[in-house]
Length: 160
Image (cartoon, rainbow, N blue to C red; front, side, top):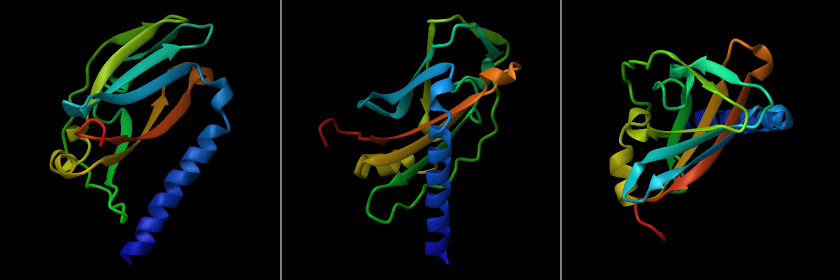
């Protein structure tokens, strides 16, 4: 039963990645997500660049770092069994206000992975961790809405 659940889980992620790739050309943002620093392995550094010819306005809580629920993040071990870590159950207090991103402008922020995955601190102290992420740009302007995704391997030790 667990094996079937894991297969369904990975097929859902694969479908998400494939479907998102079909609309890649029309996206108004470029998003870069990377490990901030090996000395802070639980922090993702996120960079958004407005690549459209229009200003993008959205509530601050919809930025990837604006609220615990702005991004979908799943962390898993890479031991060969790929067991996803349980989701952290947190009450989120989103930031308020709005932000505008002018064409060519960039915004940066940090996402703390301990808000997303229980036990990630312990796991990354022992081995590398595979992180899948998904973000949807949700604005009042429906023509600017788009989704983004990626995956990266995080290491607590550089060069490992």
